Length: 501
Image (tube, rainbow, N blue to C red; front, side):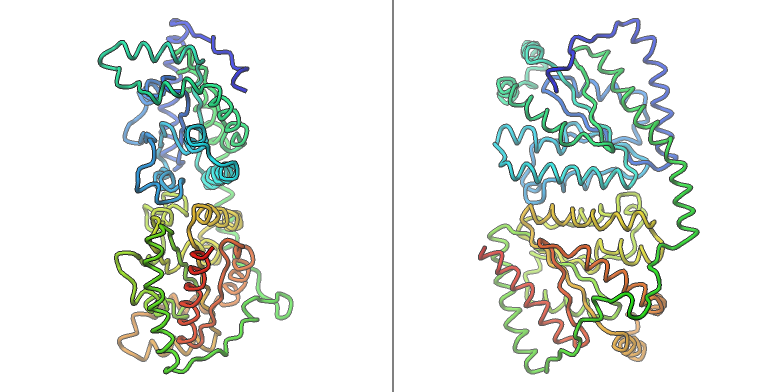
């Protein structure tokens, strides 16, 4: 692909002065539209060393309001970043709605520089291309515009620019052995770039190859590439927003009413009769907690991250279950993350962003008290997202969990199941015991009225997101003691299985 690019293209100074001012005005207008419509924008600059990324990014920034933009240079991952999945450091820097983030190099470093220099395994490479496509698809499906530029120069042009930089005492520091090594491996990089573009040039995140031999030509091509991408987005944004409002007003995206016998429920098959006497519970709890403490240390030594997700009915006992699970763990090695309704900052990002920023580093444990599954439960039932959005979320969640487990994380997911009679008993107990009243709210009673809607949503969630790499475990929780032991034993078994594997 790259060998077919004409790198002799140039633009005269006169022609540049004729077209640039109008394009710069249009850039400023588009930035205001981006803010007005709350569109998050990501611009990726990849390319050869000395291709002029810094200069061209600066040219792009000059007509814009710097308060709405952030430039993020991507260097080799530091120790903190290597302890998490490789996309983590990009997820946490995705832009809020209405802002522009420019990545000077990006997640593509993984399939370019690291691939050529470190010889990434072909299976790993395939997974990483899959992860990148899924990452970009999630963002664009949520409304983000992704514009990707690859700045292309010839091997000889790169050599010429390196020598020119080295002759300037003020700029010589910009050229090092790694840069010259890239030049020596130019053909290897060409093959890597060709495959990168072939595998990641999609309808929602296209690549533009910029002939960067001539700075004026490259500048105008970048201006026009961004303008075209934003104008395409604006052409569709108004109809989409109207359709979204109509969907929210016309239907809440709830499940259809359950007709008895027609929609068989996975949850109806759960046997909730399991019980455990107090004496047996105390004995087994002590053994489980002792083993969990040992395993926490092993996970730290082996640098394996552990993530545990708790979902379940209101009053199913998630809090008490989590307390027993962590009771003997070293508090420096784990974090419990309670998830409630998103705040204004979280709403300004992709719905998965607030979970990515809490992903544990390797060797640590994070427990989510409710999680990203709110997208396909409460947000679905209450109409906080459209039907298209919650249906799309099943794939997005599976892809995210696949990326986490490919990195090496252990992901354990619990659904705590109780029946309606047990729930009402616990609600009334909370109302009657003064120190427990804070646990019961009007929202709990309101959610109970939608039991059938939630049951249908939970059934679909379990069906669509229980995978070989992140299966759901349904915990029978009518008896709290039984539930706590089952959860602890499940964690022990999954961690031991991984350590022995």
